Structure formats: structure tokens, C-alpha cells
Image (tube, rainbow, N blue to C red):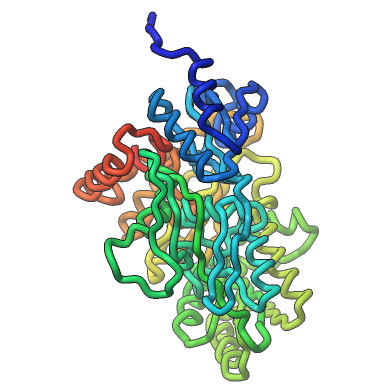
Length: 464
């Protein structure tokens, strides 16, 4: 089909270069290919961006948006490009706007218990710097060492400490955001309480770059707790019994900040990966952390573990042994992913439904003859079943798609959500009506239309 373009690509590039004063604009094919495709998409040119821009300032962001408006070009916000749901991959003919070079910790204010950062600051780097002043940044996604705070905010990332400290949304006080019309607005602020106006801060948190481009973030910091933390592991005959133990631990008054679960299949993969033997006599494994151990807390914890027939209980107070336990949990993903194609999912159910959900996933795997590795944040009801298939088979097998659909429907039936902490991206953007209902689905689109009437920002992500 013949089309008559009003502007050439060179016209677009000239305007873009003139309006991005400090950043860099790349149009080289190799760079575009690298930045357009994560491993979640097939490796062809469908989705190749027109230009990749590394912003250095908010003026660069405004310039990209001015160009996008003039030439009607979609803009894909990208931070460290660690999305697991095709949330930052390229779209054919779009701009990819990267904020990873805006990576300054502007301020750490111990007195106000906050930090002000640019979006490209790595989560773990902020935590390291805060700890030098006796504070810490609580959200700890599995990508803590590589993901940026901006991406964490855009996806409302969770992590292992959510059971005590909440997800990213619970730790954001304020934002600066560039809108599609070029305005940079400030929402929220530096106070721990804020009741004036509509809560636009939380509207942008988790919006996946569909409403505006985040340029600055104010986050809460917490003081490093006094006392000695305690970590440990325990093994159960089934995931159901583990989930029952977790329920009692969580409601016991013990100051727990981590309750991580792995099923037998996952433990076996971890053994193969690390040369250990945890799976020899276990159906599931619990890794736990108590922030401030007291004799009462330790006694109560041991009583609960005994009640649910936990075996091989290992309690570690030594920092090195605690680090080994943390590493074991972090190694779970490379252990499971090794040598396979895979999809790791991200459902969350009401806490009382965790055990039934674990049972359902196990039974589904047996019924459909699928290998499913199930792990997750047991303390907050977040379940991560990983389904695998041969590495030489590029297309996702039909029965894996069917299994995931059944899991999603079961999750919603239980009153849960099909995106606990990984966001929606393009993988699950057709489930909005199923999860939210028709009325709320319509309101979601109306909000998008209000902030982005030209549908320039991350189109087809978050909502379809």
C-alpha cells in the first residue's frame, strides 16, 4: 500500500536533535536492535525502534515529547530494561526514551527519613548509600542489583521484604513527572502524611510509563533496626503444610520480614545448580527472617515450626550464614531457568488462599504432565510458578498457554490478582476486563485518555 508521508525520517531526526540539548540520540541499527528487544520477544525486526535516546536532563525528556507530539511517534520509556512482561521493548517506528543515565542520588536526608533520586539510580546502590548513614531502602525486588528506582516505581515492584515493609508504592512520597504536553509536574512531596488533593503520586506508581515520564523520585528511608536479626530455613512434606505454618507465623506477633517458599521441584533444581542436597527428604522449603530476635520470638517460632512438623530447622544468627541463605533464594531463578525456555508468572492471592493455590498449581502440573517450579513470597501471598519447555522449541507450547490461562482464572476466582509485582506490559494486557470488570476497565482507559490523549506513551502496555 502506498502512503504519502508528510515528513522524512531525517526531518524527525533533525527536530529531535535540536530539542534534546544534553542527551544522546542513536539511530544506528545495532544499537536500535539491542535496545528494542529483550529475550521476551522473537529476534527479528518487528518492533525495531526509530531512535533510541539517552536522556540526561528533564529538558531532554521534554524535547523527546515535543518531537513525539509533532510527528505522532510513540514513546517507550525505558530505564535499566529489566522488564519481565514486555513492558519496555521497542515498537516499530517508535522512540525509546532511556532514563538510565539520569542516575544521581540527589539527596539523602536522615532527619527527614527520605532520599531524592533520579530514576536511573540502581535500587541496591541507593540502599548501600543509605546504610552508610544508618538508614536503608526497604523494597528489595529480585532485580535489586540491576533495576533502577524509576523502573521499580513504574511497575510497583515488590520483593522479599514486602511482608513487613510493603511494595514500592508504600515507600514513595513524591515524584516529578513530564507529561505528554511537555509540562513537568510535582506530585506528593517530602512529608510522611499528605491528604491534600487527589493522590496523583500513587496514580503514577505502577502506571508502567503510560501516563508520564518520571524524572525524580522522593522515597522513604528507614533506620536500620537495633538488635540482631535472625534467619533460618525449615523443610516441610508439602507446600500446603508450609503455607499453613506461614499463616500462623505471620499472625503470631513475631517481627518477621521474610517468608520465602520453594517447592520440591525448585529445591531439586537448586541442588543441581549449587551441588547441595536439600531435596533429599523434602517437599518444600521455607526461608524466614526475623528482624529483632527475642527469646519469646524464637520460642514462638520454634513452637509453630514443630506444630507443622518442620524438619531440618536451621537457625542462623551469623551474618555470613544469613548471606548464604539470602543467596540461596536469589539463586533460585538461574537454577530454574538453566537450559530451558521458561515463563515465570506472578499471581497474588488473599493470604488465606495461599495453600489452596499451591495445591491447585501442583495438581494442574500433574494433570497436564508439565514441570512447574513453584516459589514465591509466602508472607504476602505472591506465587511465582515457572513453566519450562525445551530450549530448541521457540514457540510456547499450547498446553503451557492453556495451563497459564487456567491458573489466571483460578487466581481471579480466589479473589486474587494476576500481577502481584511484575506489572502487566504486553503479556497480560488483555485481561483487564477479566480482572477489573467492565466499569473499571473503562475508567482505566478514560484516565489514559486524560493524561495521554494522543496515545503516545507506551501504547498497548498496561491496558490494551
